[in-house]
Length: 208
Length: 108
Image (cartoon, rainbow over all chains, first blue to last red; front, side, top):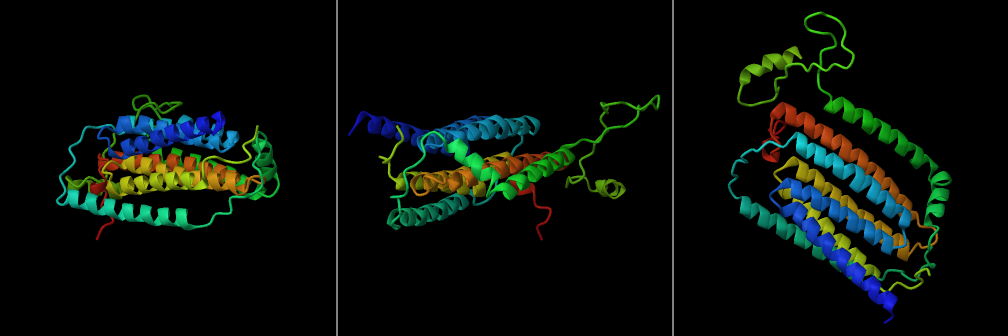
C-alpha cells in the first residue's frame, strides 16, 4: 500500500463520516439553524468527494452553487419564517417515525444489494486528470447545447417566478400626498388570507 | 499523476450515496418544518449527484457525460430551491405557520 492510497483512503473515510453524520444532523437536530449550517458541511464534503473523483470543475460548481447560493437562500428563509411555534402533538408520531424508518431501511438494503451484486464494468478508459473542465466545455457547446440553453431559460423562469411569489404588496403612490413613490417602501397592511381561526376573512379573499 | 487505478472501489461511493438518499427520504417524510423538507430534498439530489459522478469517473472516464449531467442537476436544484423557498414564504405569510401538518387545504 503506497502512501498515496493511504491518503486517499483516509480522505474518503473522513469525508464519508462528515457526510453521514452531517446529514443525520440535518434531519434529526431540533434547532433548524444548526441543521442549515450542517447542510453546508454536507455540501462541502460532497465537493470533497468530487475532488477525489478527479472532477475539479464540478467540485467548484458545487461549492459555488450549493454552499454559496442554496444554503444562503435556506438561511434567509429560516430568518424570514423564524417564529417560535408550538407544534401540535400528533397521535402515533413515534409509530409513524419507526415505520417510515423501516421503509427507508428496506429501501437502503435494496439499493445496497443492487450496488454490491451488479458486476459494474469498472475497467473503463483511464480517467482524465486535470482537463475535465475542457471536456465539459466541449460537451456543453456541442452535443449538450440545447439542454444548456434550456437551462438558462429555466433559471430565468425560476428567478422571475421566485420574485413574483415572494413579492409583497406595496402602495404605488403615497397615501397622504398621492405622489408616486419610487420604490414602494410603504408596505400595505396585510391580512393572512388562509387562516382557519377567523372565517370572516373569506370576504377579503373574494375581494382580492 | 492521474489516478489510473482507483484504490477505493466504485461500490463505496454507491453505498455512500444510498445512505445519503435514504436519510433524505426519511427526513422528507418525517419533518414537521417545511424548510427542513426542502433541505431533505437537497440531500437526495446530492446523493444522486454522487452516483452520477462516481459512474462518470469509473466507467466513462474519457467522455465524462456524468459530470455534464451533474452540472444540469445542480442548475435545476438551484432553480428548485429558489422557487420552493418563495412558495414557502408566500405560504407562511398566508398561514403564519411552517408546520407541514397544517398545510392541509387540499385534503378532502
